[in-house]
Length: 279
Image (cartoon, one colour):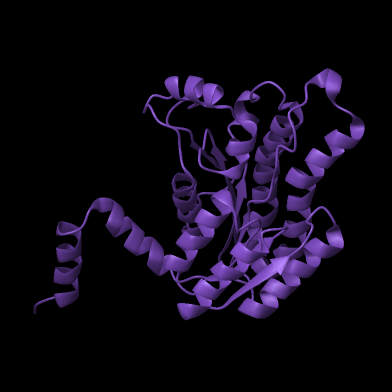
């Protein structure tokens, strides 16, 4: 008896690139998944959101000030037949973080995946320039806000047989970053530990927790603001594949970890830096 499904699959593999075939599989895994993305309307977050929409996911797009982009992305998802909502909040305030999770779950009909993308360097300050208020602000934006959102989302994620969390860390959390990024690098390093600890705590409930640590990702507001052309060129000269990353490079890695919601990877950090750091 001829297995036409097998023939179709083999034909697809033979006539598509491996990356396209993998993307096809990823699309199927993420289709109809209910996903909240923090800071999902700019830079890396926007790239993640767009790829999730392409994969057929239902998306709740959190934003702080990028209302126009967030609403356009939400409209794009709805126009594709998916559920979507754009939600504004200052995630450093626990009440607002909890509210956007509740609104997202209500609009999408629950939550399967949480992508903690919000964060900022805020400003470059060396040790002798750092005031306690600045230090606390950086940690509130990068780490405490992540804890607030995750705490609010966990009960929804635990309800499902398989759920997933992906946290955005940074190569700076591995290496220490460039001059003036002491507070930022330290907070991003803490996210790596937060990820490992959370994977142990939520693992028994069927929730996997992983992180990605991007290196130099050009074309984003972050590096457009805080990285000079000279610094970028110097960094690129030390990257084995001889180029900087872009937002889609990070988004693909995030989608991979998110799509493996029923997989065996948890407590891990995926480095995205072109081979400049591989420890």
